[in-house]
Image 1 (cartoon, each protein chain N blue to C red):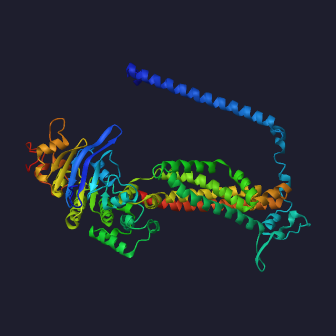
Image 2 (tube, each protein chain N blue to C red; image 1 turned 60 degrees about the vertical axis):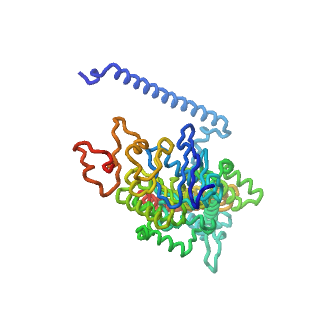
Image 3 (cartoon, rainbow over the protein chains, first blue to last red; image 1 turned 30 degrees about the horizontal axis):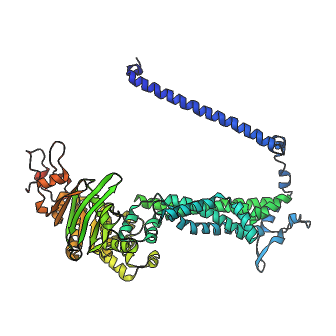
Length: 317
Length: 285
């Protein structure tokens, strides 16, 4: 005798109903996956048809770029990175490394690419700062539990949505027409987008705070600014910082891309050297970018752990 | 009106939440310097009543007067000034856990100062000294530099009292101040409230869950049931019938034993002996 036969009819009926329901759910899942596959294949085919180059025809040429990217002399990568004269220099722009030197004083110079990288990182830092400064007050107005007025809340929320809605490149294009091409247009574009992006994350943090301190200060007779400053900010600041550091990481990447569309910095140089097929220069730039982004990410991860880790400890105490 | 100086008058106050009436048509007059205990079952409207006095909640009907002036219609900065004069402490203390104790106490001064200097957190030396003195009076000055969230419940409630005192209030409201505390801390907190009441002459109105605390500390007890005042008198008048009107009897008709909820540290041993013959619920009566 198995134990199943011992159960009552009602129990068995319920078990059967559950199994029917489960198999139905599995069927729908399988159907969904099947439809997704069909849709994907169809899209691929459509894209291939519509693409002038034809994806499958061009696939064998995938690795063609290696022919120009791999330098004849690997040492040229280092020379390009540090602006050291190359013996391969024949007067063309491909190997004119020392020309980029940015002299600070006497014989001391900053290599061109490091200077450009600095510009790019600077654009990211300044625009994140702009984003933070505006996102903090906006986030308190936009939070349901802290807002001073529901109407103002909606206005600010819609405004931040608007800022988020346009990709940075679109805003940069707009401002490049006004303030001309260069880092300023990039800063404005990334800064505006950061206000919207950080503001949304911030106000969602604000909506989750413990309201008892706020009630306590309300009972003291504190006004809105004082309640936000003393009951809100201490609770949310560690999380704000954490998201801001994350935003710095993102903005370094974005400001690189901005360079490629005329926002100055290292992206511009990278695009130029790729389009001209300068292998050593391209590799040097990619290497520098890779190291910088790695360092920024590591540093911000470490700082975030320190910030949030300490606060998590405080909260549990 | 007939109100003498610094009398708190609650006239025909009701409060509805949707279809529920939390407080209905309450009329109370509390002269300056009384220590009032509000008792009643959970949901009787005690908290709502206190919150309406401090204006954390607005009354649906009726009005509240203090010192002859209506406070239930105030808005903006006069409202905040009234909230400053009418300090409140809470069951969950409502401190800012991440700020240190001294800052929490100093926050009681917010309404005495300009917003600008508040936002920069610039408190004067005198104010800091006052804050430390307030902490000393409650015997927790040594915790001044710790984050408030790291303190025990009893200590946090004392910080909340210190913050309330920094407001230099005329009325002190306490919403279940000892409901989350152990008996010893409950005694410390209630002793401080009585001390504030007797030394400074500040009116204290406190919601309480424990009858014996109300009897021991208050010189007037208000009993609430289903949003209405069903008892209002001296502790001596709170007899068995009055208690039954406030709390009702349980299904078996048994009455409430004060010993069950008592937070007294010197509880009489004979009340604990439940195996013996039935004893009157209130041995004193």
